Image 1 (cartoon, one colour):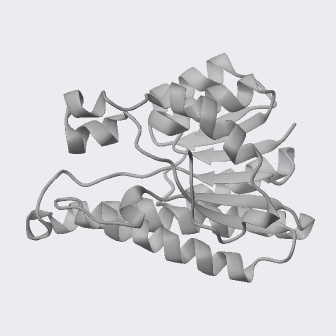
Image 2: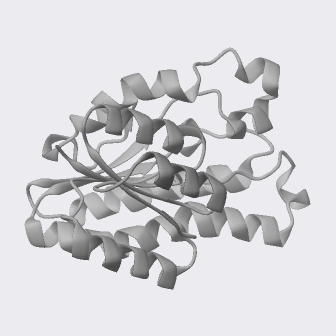
Length: 226
């Protein structure tokens, strides 16, 4: 049984991963910004699982969350930075400074905050895998999603640099989850086009076994869920 930390568990891929990891017998420690979905997880899954309202852009919240979990649980075997937001479709010059900053704060700074406060415990144990969710738009680009593309390209670089800093026996992996029918995809493609792709639950049935087999051999590799 592995201990798995996941951010962004209130919807989409994060929500689907929680269900599948727990179904397979693993302990999930998750966070999200929305109170009602977190309360629902708390009602459905008791200890050893743990779900908390945390804004990953606020470092003191992430630190308090990590400190609490690391007192009651082992260091994560798998740390999954999934939480992300996307800008509304628009040319770059029409994206407000506030919206641009929010995408940067969640998708880059939030990832760094979580790594900063969970990775030291993993380093002390000298094992564990960090998976930072990237995107197809972290390796290519498209119109009207420039802020999102910028953050996912950054995640590719951040993760590969982190991989060079880790000791032998650990791994950091930038992972493109593929194209999945989620609220985020619908905001870009529209509902009818997004419906052509697998939903999050279907995706999780393939993705979770893929995530569980990641190890030191994958350190630094830009991977994609098949």
